Structures are given as structure tokens and as C-alpha cells.
Image (cartoon, rainbow, N blue to C red; front, side, top):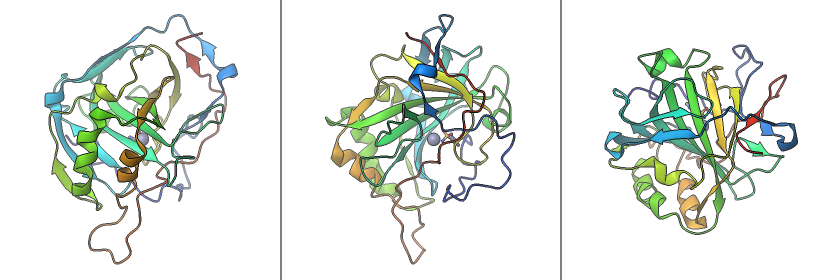
Length: 261
Ligand SMILES: NS(=O)(=O)c1ncc[nH]1
Ligand SMILES: [Zn+2]
């Protein structure tokens, strides 16, 4: 699927572009729990992923992306804060050089060692990711925090494939992976807010759905993430792919809603 290959992940992200589109609903943010507002109208999230739509993993010089076939409505999310049905196009992670930081969002300033993003686009309204990426209600990203703990058996298949995409622009076939194994058992408790992509084009098209419950991965599994490189095989100087998160952005007038009290 072209859902993310066309998105130029400029890096390092810390060279923030001068002009940001709109600029009043940027991501990521710190979620201040006591300022979030419980919304009883938020429905449970309905996630339906088909592992047969899993296609490949590639290193785009910013993160590694697991890409899904998004030409049909086989892997979708709806419900929750979403009015429409959204198609999964890819998932990726953000992580730190150590376990003290790495996530893009934080909860009352608490950072996690890593954060999973499952990226979906509004297939009720648009026919391509590229169309949806510039529209206000075009995208929905589910974020899940990772904590260091017991080994995540479902993640291991992905970890084992990472050495094959060590360098920027490397790609391998990767199939039959069900990303619902990366969701916490309880997906009914989440925060949601209107935000943006955290990598270029930084468009303000995202309904963020940040899970309250985290998942656990082992120290060794996360160490393999850190063995990836930002740089391509040809480059003289190799740079470890770590700290690939964006600086947090101002909340401005936004309200973060919670699906739980
Ligand atoms: N990190 S993010 O999920 O906001 C994203 N997905 C595609 C481009 N940027
Ligand atoms: Zn992301």
C-alpha cells in the first residue's frame, strides 16, 4: 500500500519545519489527566484486523513501518470517537536510547520507553491515504504505550524480522501478522483529542486515540529496535535509530476527552 511510502519522513524530526500548517492542533502532547473531560457519549472502539492484509516491513529512515494492504476494508477501526470507518494502513513505533524516555505522548508528564502508532485513514470519505492525510477528519491513530517487563510473544515475530531492515530504505516481505496482539486487553479506556501527524507533513488530520493501558515488552526486544539505523547502507557514518520522537506541542484551547471516569 502506498499509505506511508509517499509520506516523506524527513529526519531528524527535531529540525522542525518553519511553517506548520495551522499550528493550533499539533501532536504529540502531554495529557493532563485532571484536565481531561469524561464523555459518556464515547462508544467502545471496534477494531477488526485481518492478518492476511499484512504485506511488508520497511525502514524509512525514521522508524520501521509494518504496512498493510489498504485497498479494501478488511482491517478497520470504527466506533469510539469516530463517526466513520477507518482503514489500517501501517503501524510503527517511537522509542528512546534508554528506558527513561521514548514515547511521544505522556500522561501527567510520565513518559514511556516506547509508543506504538496504528495509522488508519477514513475510507468512508476518501479513497486513498494521500487524500485523507490533508483532511480534518482524515486519519485516526491508535497509540499504545510500551513498558519494559515480560517478553511479548506476539511481538517476537516482528523483532526477528528487524535485522533484515537494519538500514534506511531496506524492505522485507512480512505477512500474516495480526496487530491486535499489540493492543492491551482493555481497549475501552482511552483518551481522545484532535491533533496532527508527528512526522512530516504534520497535517492536522488526526483523531488521536491514546490507550490508558500499556503493553509490556522485554528489555531485549526493545534493544533490537535500537539496533536499527537511521542511515542507509552506503553512508559512511551509521547512526542508531533511537529517540525518533517529536518534541511535545502546545495543547492550546483543545480538550482531551476520556472514555472512562
Ligand atoms: N507518527 S504518526 O503516527 O503521527 C505518523 N504516521 C504517518 C506519519 N506520521
Ligand atoms: Zn508515529
